[in-house]
Image (cartoon, rainbow, N blue to C red; front, side, top):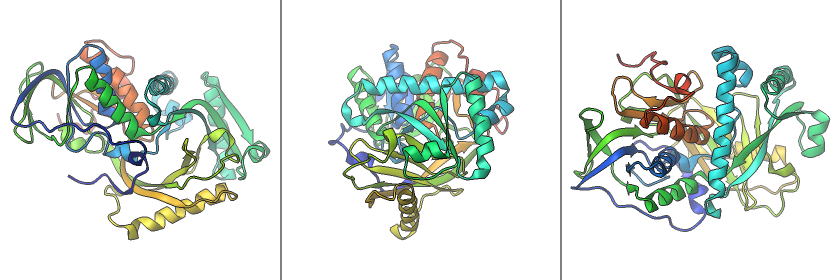
Length: 410
């Protein structure tokens, strides 16, 4: 199993030991839906589908939440890596605006869900500051501000003086978006799994999917350890291992990113309302705080799939991120406590892949590729619920496989 991250992770360190689940070995399970993958996407799907009355089995080849979800920085934002202005050019005004609104709606539903869970998911509602990295980016940022306003999104424009009045750093301009949030993505996955298990979902760790045979409605799924699962449908929430879903040519770009979390600092008063921070540069830096007083900052993405494999490789990235954090907040005494490097994926059209594989009826994918992984996970659970219950969803044409078949096997 190829590793998805390297280093010391912040999120699993918060809170007590999570519930552990047995492997499936030598027995047969029956269910409406088998979910493959116990990260945030899989656990959200298990929670939503189980609550809708479907019988669910969830398997993970490792442990719940320990894959890419544990290495996420936990920012919940409706704005995408692709600006709305550019998305309108790509999809057309109506569909581009529809998609951005769907992201905003998914953030809100995710926030509402997190608010009902135990405090160790560390959820807080936040606004976001999207700033121009250089003066050359101000014009494009201004166009994005006007585009967001024209399509009904509540945003503010800050000039250089406005930013300086709120923060200890200088940036030429920024957009403030509202309705975003932050959380501990690992703990969210853990709690969602516990919630689903408490309502009847059957969960197995250290259980890999080996093969799937048969028609939709009667799929025979074999797992490591000799387990058999008979399912009506299979959902592949396999994160950055799309090959497990048996679909090639999805048009994805693999990369890796870096992040650090500092030691707790006595005061974050200089960080206005603990807003989430990101910038126009590509690749971009992104930063947030934690409820217990840490600074988390990430970036320096590279087009390399595998994460680094040693502290010697990781330390230069971590030190550069610390330097960037100190530039933003020079009066804070910041020291690294956690540092990690992790694989991630982006789709070439900037949209997630969600829906039934037209070449394999009964096989569904939930692949939230891009900077809004947690938001796409929420979106996927709802799109899949409609699909599994035989209803069309307004996002099907945008995120489904049938209408984005370039590179898919025929």
